[in-house]
Image 1 (tube, rainbow, N blue to C red):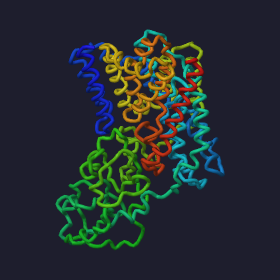
Image 2 (image 1 turned 180 degrees about the horizontal axis):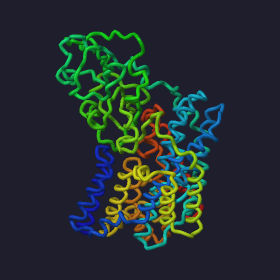
Image 3 (image 1 turned 90 degrees about the vertical axis):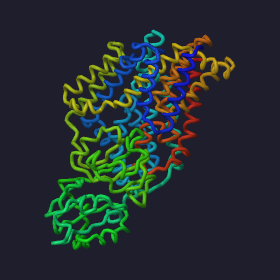
Length: 588
């Protein structure tokens, strides 16, 4: 292996370290690696950009649109309405969630499935008197198991298949090729989940994470004829308070939200602040600020057309991670004000402006009505929870399911390739009105697409420079030539990488190594490729390892240790079951 190989290997290692640190978005890291590989001449322009035209990637984009059609037509809501019911036990409730979600996730991208189910399950948990913490992790795990049922179950399966086709020139896998392994693993996994999780999951009743607004807001008034009348908010010194944020001004029966510094104060204005309520004495020391004389309910408790209260969950790709709320400048960035932060199911106390934001934090925001539609697909937020969202087109719910079934049938029968079936399905979803063009555009997860496409360049460099063969030789030596042990090692490596970087990047980086390994061993590559698909999906141990885990982290009121305690044994168990099933199916 010459310097090109060592350089590619070092660059791959550096990319892994940067992505696992959590400080850099995976798509930025992989795009930077693509630029370095191309600029250094290690790979040519065609190979650098090959990922962007890969059939697997284009299929993923089309299926994002198909999933959007089912989601926006109310197709998932239809299922929820008929299946959830009124179970009497925790195990019964988990089963009502797990079975339909597992099936759904076999044919739809599991992110919109889980996003739709979270508010429904949360409301349902209150109705049946079972803590959300008993239901949210099973929801995520069921979606993960479902992704292993078919080739279109997750973007990872499609991408691995696309890379396999590109590197080998083979036809690739059929839509149900993974089912012979994924179905028994899913059945065993769901059964064990229903057997074990009712006892292992914490029982944190549906605590109001933010409690009463009185706990974190206070209200004062601007004195009539006082020195602040006519001054702007900035001139009055109300923008630079250490422990408090000005949220809104109630004036003459209406409110001014996300108050700009230039807003002029009037006598009798009712000022609502969020933060450390013990700081009211600091406010009352300001000449012209007097106690609020209103004795009725707090301003934030009233329904107002000018604003709404929204819960938003921060994603691992958010630009504001690691920043304090004051430095993040939510008002300027999003047109919203942070009222409180919940972490691990509890409100974070102390100085609001100094709280450093972390992935999975649940933010209570006061925002203008347009915030929800504008930010719903922003990569900074995993989930935006609001009761007044746009109503699905329920009259097209059955149509969206019909389009999906036809799409799957065309691909399964070989009438169309998976790519063409997905493209036709996406086109018909838009044409039939199951989703709008705008909704389809927003449904495409651009950071995920960029990560996948750029990962192809890294995978190609490892294969072309001989670095993949070098790593394959190391695995071959460790396994001592035993096929089953080599299979187990491949699964283990992908599983560990998936917990620290994205599952797509982990899979794409390992595929060239696996192909070199199977070539050196003289064995069929198919069971190893299936193992890569399975390991990249079966991520249970941390909320960071899989998108749906992070999505349920805040709404379930979980702590990081909850996932470790439940998910680590599940990772080990499912890994052993998967390798065992593959060895039986393929005679390894």
